[in-house]
Image (tube, rainbow, N blue to C red; front, side):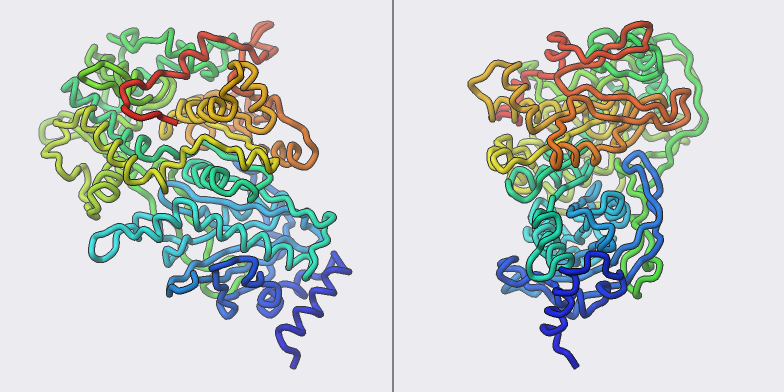
Length: 620
């Protein structure tokens, strides 16, 4: 019987000379074991050959979605394997989909997760198949494909598991990528990778936590990717997660807890009032900058509101168990759709009434952002008026027929687990705070500072100097929904501007933006919510084919001054193709809303760049 080494040589030569080899020939455990990366190419990582599983999948279909154009008739090799770190007894599981040799297009795609999950499972892997890319994901060493960082962050003794924290922060995606890149080369080219002239293009795609994970790679490993598509990144975690409690602090300060219905009316009024500020009436707020300047929640005071029962959305399970069709037992199945917000919401009965002045005050203060109570200076930003009020949810008390404070799950988890290091899962509870009615903005600032000091090297992911990535020719397409109600769109603008100022300190604003746009572009998506189209603005477009644009930029030098986007949902513009402006240019429709220009507007720019002089450190 031939040894594994002999088998490797034979199959390697066969693959080098016959690119259209049958999938079955190269999709088996023995062949995958034979093409595993050599230890020298993945220093410190010990691959476990007997962990390999492999099975062929034929005629697979990727459903079209806002994140992918979809494709059918896909054949690929479904592979899992594991490794551990030298000198440890840990285990990290990897999952790769390798296109059939005749469908492979000399690309590797790394994918990330959402919420506190490091993987999006089959959803992310399927995206790569559409583009002929070998695609990978990792479980981060968490012990299960369904485990999240919050499941493993604390050791049994109540201390932080820093190895898994750093794995989530940046290490696991990096290790999955370097293993996957070499595995891809070996799989399609034997010992000497010759496909595409020896060039393997490497990409990353992810949104929300997946967007943060993409930035963690760009900031630390400059030569790892040729291009990244990152959406609504959950970076600046110390700010982001604590600010999920900002709505409760605003309500406590104003001593008023409005129903979700009352605030939904204000949000609806904002969308209507701001719709045509871009020159087109389509139910989409494309200019949240102008909306901030022109809309005040007091205009809704006295207006009637009425809603059916609302809320009652618990945090969903991550996903079912089972195997991929045709796969061996234990191969992970499609993860359940991760609710990006992962907050849950308390149930509320049908309600109606008239918008109060107190509700308007809460809304205006929430939009204004976090300010220091002593100096009156701004600490951090909040959401635009067109975003829904998810972070201001309140709890209904049926015994008193009143609404009271509700603390969002992401915010309480961060304070209780990441700062206090206690796995307190009691709803609506913050350790060290006697009552949510005592929550203040100054307390939030203190928590932000604590989180920044504790997690600046792992979760903050706000390093603004990208010299290595730029030097290696990398390209970045960064997008963010303007009406995102989970991560403020201004968060992306602040980081984009930090990179501009850091990379081009001696140039004027316009000169530095032009230089930055040669390799890094930011696109704000009109009306879009968090990593998806927004049903409240159904005619809004979404960049479904962003990977097409990234690939064209990397492989054909087609720099996208505008980004293609498609209108989803049930609006009357459904199916229409539109384009998005590259920031700082902003959309302005002319000719009765039939033609769009991308215009420079200094008043607009000023709204995006607050001083944040109420925070004692630079905010990148």
